[in-house]
Image (tube, rainbow, N blue to C red):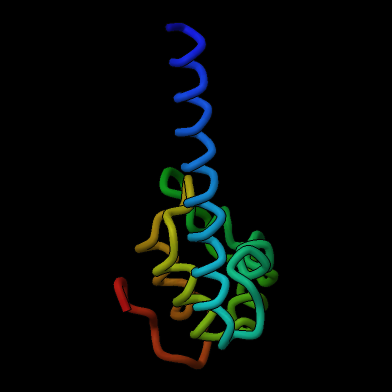
Length: 111
């Protein structure tokens, strides 16, 4: 009985892993108009992490603003409307274009 439970548990984790991989492929294909994958966009926005922290946000650095400007609105919106990112306040992320004086329309949640 214990072996059967362990096998079932393994299959559940394999299915969860498969779903995560498939979801990431879908998000990457949706982020294609901005010229990069969802994951690479997240990596490019790493300098913005302190500015979108849910607990003690700092003003965005010049490196953060440069990343926001170079990625543009489609990429930023793909990240903001993508899967949740631990420790990132989406409302703070929505404010980045204004705080960085980026010359594009702000993103809206859910679009």
